[in-house]
Image (cartoon, rainbow over all chains, first blue to last red; front, side, top):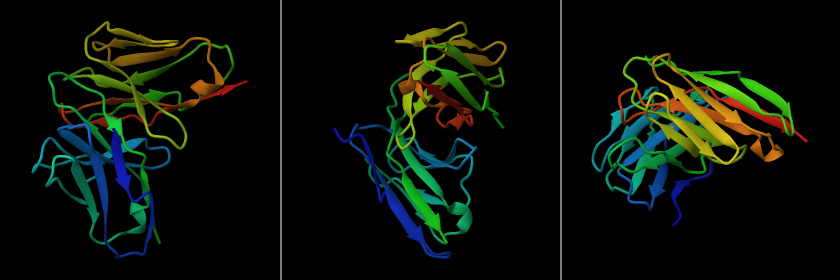
Length: 114
Length: 111
């Protein structure tokens, strides 16, 4: 099992450009999450999904869109990148079975917006 | 808004020392508390998921306790080793399915 994978690992964008980050998991998890990590601020939830075709806003959703067309994939889009979106982005997934379960994280995508 | 506070922000200890740090959270509407270990240049990995007041969990030299009535959890590391150096995150789901992380405690263990 590859677990949770993220594509790409690194990216540099110019202000105003758009891009999509791909998260894929092969654990048949229902729930998937996108976080951003900034110095001194821990992980902040951008959007999440509790199943195929569903998405919900997290703590810092502005400037981002997401889609969950397939259960195994969760896409994070930046329509018009801004320097404030320079960050490391982590995807995570977890199972849905009864009770709280730990999240499994991908390796991260480092994005720089100039 | 669910505020998850972790203290201290950073900690430096000598190899062999035992140490502990704190995660504080509002005691109302508690659902679960997660502890994650995050090594530099790696991804966070789950240590514990705790749900009941008075819960105690242990994994090797690392253990955690939970007090939901007063809104805190302690993480203990006994006999710290250099490989324990990492950032330790706690997190709670405000509405069950989402997640709010604290800023973490960065532990450095000197040989």
